[in-house]
Image 1: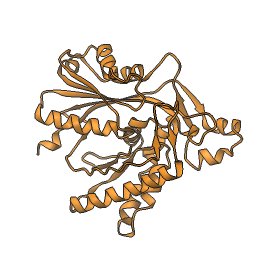
Image 2: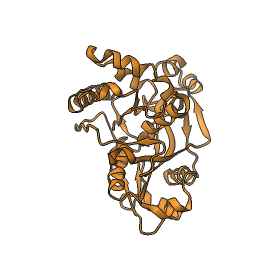
Image 3: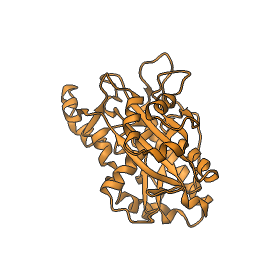
Amino acid sequence: MQDKYVGIEKISLYIPKYYVNIEKLARQRNVDPDKWTKGIGQEKMSIIPKNQDIVSMAANAAINILNDEDKKNIGQVIFATESGFDFSKSASTYLFDLLNINKFAKTYEIKQACYSATAAIQIACDYVRLRPNQKVLIVSSDIAKYGPKTGGEVTQGAGAIAILISSSPKILRVTDKFVSLTRNEYDFWRPSYSEYPIVDGKFSTQLYIDMFKESVNEFKNRYKNTLQNIDTMLFHLPFSKMGKKALISLEEDLSLLSQKWLSKYDQSTKLCRQIGNLYTGSLYLSFLSQLIYGNLKENSEIGFFSYG
């Protein structure tokens, strides 16, 4: 029963004020704009100015939701990112100092590609279940950056999402029902010698679809009579059409469920279309988009597909 009462108490988004119009970028690159605006479903992508970084974005996201009582009760600060700038010191230490949080809080950084924020939420929920009087601040902050005129250029973006986990989850209760699936693949990676990530777009898309299908089937087998209760499925979205491809791929015996989730899919992509790829924060940008533009009812059950 305690599982029902741990989760997201507050959530906040910060994005830079600058952006690139995808249609204008397509014309500049001599690409048919429909290939990007309709093909992958993007309209704009946020761009970070030179006087900002992942810590400043994280601080701007977090400061909007924290009061003095929160800062006093925060037991951990977890920074989820794949845009870290220090090979030793965690970005969470800088953030902790800027926000003036309780000095006895533990601070650390998590890197596991775009899955990092979900890993942080699971760790935070377990922590709060054992310490219901404490809270955990999670901040996902990233700069998705690719080389000019590369295939990934149109899937850039920048921003931060702050999430406060507590035993008073006014926004979302997090249960202990989940499936983890790990494979060592080379669809996307960023070695130390490269300024930009290396990505195999077609392979990455197919791997995403395969991992989603396998995870859904395992969830169905592990938690009987649970999957059909999920009203909405949310996705990590490097671009807004990605999750739709996964939903369409579901097997015939899940087609009715797929149709139900597809009917609510577009509401979860509206922010992604305007902001772009947030890496570790992309899944929770989908969640915010569904909260703002969707028609979620109290006690609706939501599925989250985190990929990275």
